[in-house]
Image (cartoon, rainbow, N blue to C red; front, side):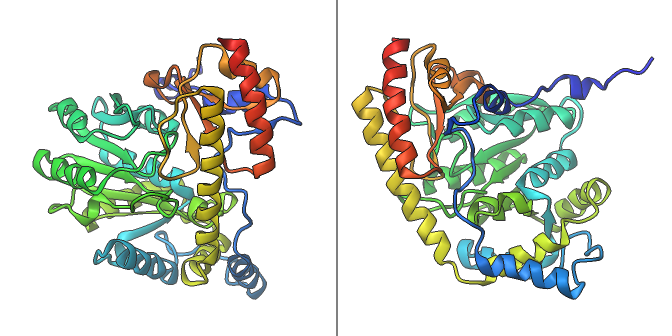
Length: 373
């Protein structure tokens, strides 16, 4: 009899998608993690040129075009100050595939992977699909990842721990001190630190730091993506990098699952990386302004919310029934438990939408809060 694998039976459709499907067509969607800016024109044109010239008709190298990988390496040399060899970069089908190949290449059946709780929904699911056991690690009260809690959770079965800064769903940004600790933990315990940095450019307070800047061993693998950096979510172009031996194993997974990332998207991402970065500054300034609108609105409503320092999410503490009351009134927010057990009592609000919709949504949330109290 045909059955289904235990791996796939251990996961379910994302709770985020369930909320989307429950909402009406005219709802204000504060659940979607997508910048509301267009892809930079020069990136679009690069894809058009590649298609019209025929350059996008064929497979690229499994790792991606040499020019794209050099542009990625240049970006990280400039931003993180690391000596990144383009041969140690793999272009992937978005950051999602990058996470997938990293976990598949490093996790055996029964291995433990420490994940932030609440944290991005894919960490739990992709660990299970790799045959591993996700181990949720609670966050601090300010929703940052606590290196001490990570270190305390390590056992002889731990293969990896995941860090994410700026964070989804929290908007939290790890301090340089904490990031240095993540690197030390990876070095001293000889476990992989998988660093998800897809919101790297969206930081309002302080700066972004990567564990790979401080690690003394090769125990850090970094995931990044054009999706949030350059508002290219639909292009599905991400990348993963690390030491040569780790990249070679991740390439084994990538070449059979994907062969190569979309060729037009690779040319577009190369242009985005090499071209005018004005849109990045524009997006960051806009998201910071919207964050402040949301926080002021929450304060007026009476919702307690740690101040997000990056990305475009806020995670207020909400009363039971608040999410349903919002949905009933046509505003989509995501229940915190969709991101882990410790997300209960919270909701994730994405403010990657225009300011007029945000203000209208805040009025609705005030009504929902009163109804749920």
